[in-house]
Picture 1: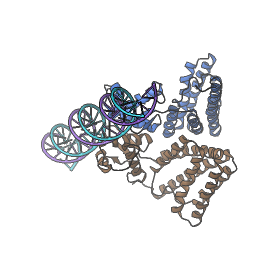
Picture 2: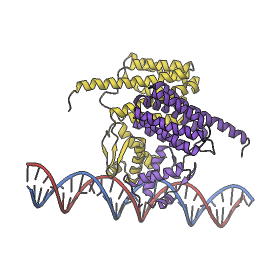
Picture 3: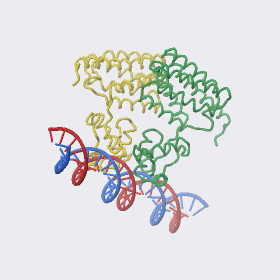
Picture 4: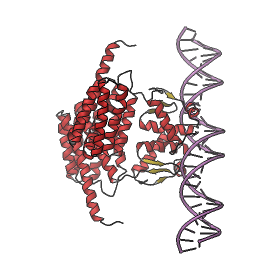
Length: 225
Length: 225
DNA sequence: CTATGGTAAATTGTAAACAATTAATTAAAT
DNA sequence: ATTTAATTAATTGTTTACAATTTACCATAG
C-alpha cells in the first residue's frame, strides 16, 4: 500500500471496497474473496477482514459464517422500506434546514436550483444528476445535525444496491425540480412544517415512480424466465 | 472460547463488548485495550479488532489512528439529535403499525398496556421498564419492516451512551402511559396518520423531559467544577 | 446415467510473530 | 525545580503461519 492514508489501512480498504460496490463492479450476491482482494490492494488479509466487518455493519455486505462475505442483495421490498425511512428523515431535514439554515445557504440553494432548471430546459440528465446531489447535500449541511447527515448518506448508499436496469429513472426531472422549488420556498419563508412535508412528499413521489416503473417492467416480462 | 457460537467468533466478541458498553462497565471516553480484551475473552487480537470495527460503524465506539478505540462520548447536543431522528422514525413506526398490524397484535398491545397501567398504579418502575420495552418492540414487529426495526434498535442502543445520573428520568410513568393509550387507540381505529403523530409526540415529550432535567441540573451545578 | 462417498484443493477462521507508532520513564540542562 | 531530550516500555498496525471448514473433483456402486 503506497497510498497516502491518515486514517489507517483498513479504513482506506473499506472505502475502496465500498466504491467497488457502489460503482456496481461488485454486484448483489457476488462473493468477496479475501486473498483476491488482498492481492488487489497489496495488503494482507487482516485489514480486508476488518474492512468487511465495517461494511457488513453498514449494510452493504452480508456475512455467512465459514462461507465468507457477499454483496448484499436488495429486493424491491427492501428498497421500498428504505424509501419510507428516507421520506421521514427528509422531513426532519426540511424542518431543521428551514429552522437553522443561514440566509447565505438559502441563497446557494437558489443558485443550485437555477442550474437544475437550466438542466431541465436542455434536458441534460448528466448535468442534472450532480446538481441534484449538491442540492440535497446543501440541505443536509443546513440541518447542523451530524448524526442525521451520517444516517442519511448511509441510506442513500444502501439504495445504490438496488439498481435494476433503468428503474431509478432518469425522466421526470421537471417534476422533481418543481418539488425542489416548493421545498425552497418553504425554507425561504422559514416555514419548517411546510418544508418538512414538501421534503417527505419529494421522496414519496420518487418511491411512487419506482413502483410504477416496476409494474411496467413486470408487464414486459410476464412469464417466469 | 468455549462458548457456543453459530455466527463466528468476532461476532460473539462484538456482542460481548457491546454489552460491556450498554451496561456501563465501559463508560464514555474509556480506552479499549486489545490484549486486555483478548485475554478477557480467551481469544487472539484478530477477532477483537474485527469486532471493534463493527462497533465503530455502529456508532458505539470511536477509532483514533495509532491510538486505539474508545467508547464514544455522547454530549447533550448529540443525544438531542438522536431524539429528533427517533421521533420521526417512530412516526413511521406508528403509521406502519396502524396499517399492517394484525388484530391479534393489537390485542397483545392492549395486554401490555394493562400491565403498564398496573405498574403506574403501584408506582413500580422496575416493572414498568421492561413492559415499556415490550410495547415498543411489539410496535416494531407490527411494521413488518426489517430495516426500520434494525435502525430503530441501533439508535436506542446509541442513546444508552448518554447516561448522566438520573437524566433519563424514572418519573412521569403516568404521562408516558397516557400517551401509549393515545397511540393504541389510533392504531385500533386503523388511523395511521393519527398513530404516527401520537408516536412522534411521545418521543418529543421524552426529549422535552430530558431538556428540562438538564436545565434543573445546571441550576444545581452553577459554577465550573 | 445418477447417486454416493471419499480425497484433495481452496477458502475462511484463528493464532502467533514482527514492525511501527505512541506513551512512559529517566537523565541531563537551564 | 521545571523543562527538554533520550531511552525504554507498552500498544497498535500488519504480516505470516497454522487450523478448521467448505467446496470441487473423481472414483465407485447402484
